Length: 437
Image 1 (cartoon, one colour):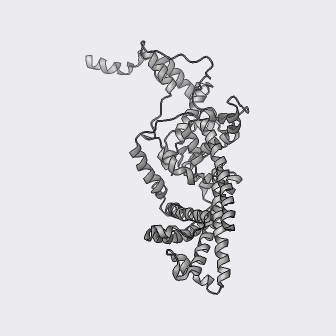
Image 2 (image 1 turned 90 degrees about the horizontal axis):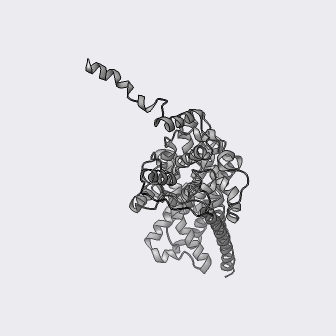
Image 3 (image 1 turned 30 degrees about the horizontal axis):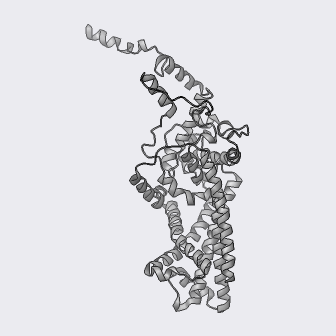
């Protein structure tokens, strides 16, 4: 009973802290704007099954992709066992799912045991790639020491989670003997580790492993929302809410579309705007201008760097890093979101564009969408970059000289070139002359 009471208190405290964090994120999402409608549900389900659960984009790089995929699939399987542990801890049962699921439970426990051992190997490999091999895409101006520490802490926590799970299984197999529920291939093969240890000591090892695992799970759950590893929670919904359609299709601005339609249709009426309504801004200048999908993308970013590694601007030495755009958006929301939640007029004298992301970064983008294509969780970097460019051009009248010349030509000549519309067909004069002769 004392174990139940202690676990219930800790569980409720962890859920309370997690609830506060979710409430904080909810307030930040309320600061953002609406985006595309949620339509074509069958296609969204297909995308989720393929990209999120099937890990199809990760598997483009077979070796490391397969390791990550098995870690993800292992998490899904082990989460079932973790949920069972929480129920056991709250109500005082012992592996209650075994009596309900029967052979399915055996399969879950067996696969979870094998995958836990694989995840231990994967975590050590991932740490080696980060600190021994030093994979290039793990570096960059946005990958600060804090970001690298975040990744290291998360990998170590996952490593200890799996070690504690295996420790619990090894002790359980020893204690339960022939009465054990489920099959544990790895833990049974490691029985030699506890062969010469007494039953009371093994029981203590089981309790220590159980508490270590469940405490790490609940602590990890509360760290994740403040970490890049929040993608563990966000990746599935973010893929489901993917903007469907061709990547390269740029959206029109609703306010500009309405204005143009009104100009072309004399009978159209424009709804008068309330006198106290805030003046809408064109594009994205700061966090209150982004839409909810932009912010969800920033929370989902794994900072894996695949986007930056395929960016043609970045690979040719330009400042743009698509990963940095998402990292900066998340940092900016963390900086301004709390004040903006309390006071809609709050300002700290800074802005996302200018203070966090420079014009040089934004104008380096070729809008090729290679970053979007490569992202394993369907993050849309380019639409955010284009919206920030729109703010620069339409709010600040700021653009590179070559673009200013093009804008002027479009305004004066109806085309990007510096020729009068009346001269547009002069190139064909000789054709008509030769035909006449």
